[in-house]
Length: 57
Image (cartoon, rainbow, N blue to C red):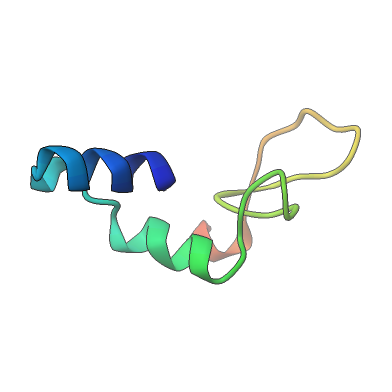
């Protein structure tokens, strides 16, 4: 998200603005591997991709 913010502010093009979903994920602390959950659930020692419950239909 930080890189997107730099691109958006530097270039001023809307295509580089971070999506609301990404902003909500970062704001709520769902930082992926750093926090154990993001778009996927991360289990220490496992390389299996498990979709987070919030994105399952």
